[in-house]
Length: 220
Image (cartoon, rainbow, N blue to C red; front, side, top):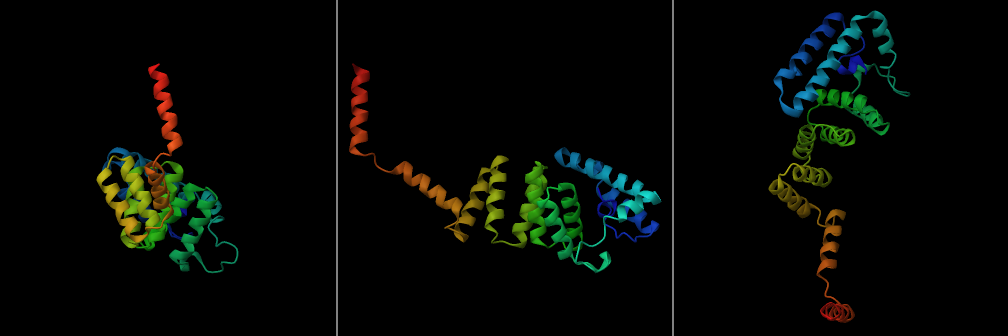
């Protein structure tokens, strides 16, 4: 856990800025504001905020954490000058490395800076799928991705599957229909069409003759 990322602050933040960030996020993620599966996710995040705040109050722990917040090789700009795209790139790397906790922390920071970045919402969905995370968070991430990029067929099909797993058949079917209009030659629809074609092919005369023999044998 990188406490700077959890609290969404720069490594050179003042004690006052650290305290203000903690109180703001603790209020936002307080478990009493959530119910059901979201409450469990909020409790986990709330604990991370407390751990991060306690770590940054300790000078030794803060110095140790700061070692891991320098720009990656080739990146010479100060962290405070880096763009959402820079942080998104690091989130992708963390996701590829299966460092899901770091990835989701970075993505939350990206969306704090730019909530209209469709790719970041898609990557949040990827983390939820990879970790078996809260399906409501998964649905929200995919809905936001599609809202910002309406012709994202992959996101539409993933959301349709998620809707179906939640018993929302009508919404799933409607979304698949919309995706089919946008990309009728998508591999998902080709497989579906080939399956239907195979099941509707007429049986050969040999197959019909074998069925007839089998029926006579059963009668005998």
